[in-house]
Length: 268
Image (cartoon, rainbow, N blue to C red; front, side, top):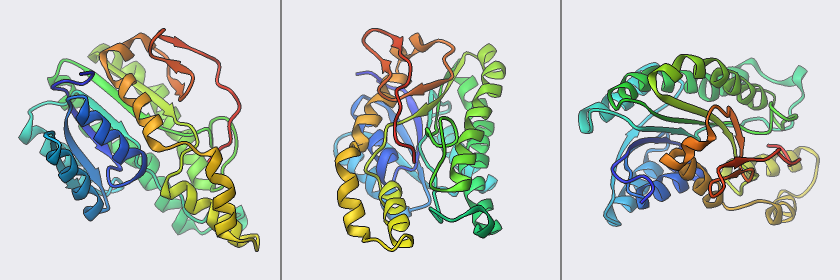
């Protein structure tokens, strides 16, 4: 099993990539602490993992709130005493397609607080627990949006570019602690967030949301595909990625331990 006896925190565990990664990691032997603001969805994921014989504790967590993130990591310490892996797929995208001069400051702050500040807070409070394990792995999920091109949402793209910058700076601080950190950009996935953005933009343009979603689905992969890549990268075999900072899903070959040049892809 790729993650046998590893202790992992996985955010966004109620739906989409976070949920798929949590289930996949548990099946690979990881012991989990799950985080999400969606309590019902997060508890459902934890119960599914437990029903399959795995170990999962759910903690209601708003990543924009320092107290919530501290409580999440305190739970890790109480149950396991250390942390081996942190994977952060959690993110929000709001007001897709809204022009910059019409975009509200409230929505801007909300997205930046969850996506960027939340990543900072997770790292801040996870590092002491990773040190107790003698090192570990951190995977912060970004996007082609704000890194390779634009986005349907101003703060979403900006926040994902910011998370990549956070990784670039943090890797130099974490390397002496034997903590490997990557910014990982998944492929385009059929998640609630992605489909919601597609529907919202279609409606704003006066088109059918149902038709826009139907036309987009063939080009979107299931979250499980990207979850498998995250699990591979979090495993001991993923150490072959070395100091690579940004790894684009589909371009990391776990079998040959090689990185390939990212291909053009549609952005969030």
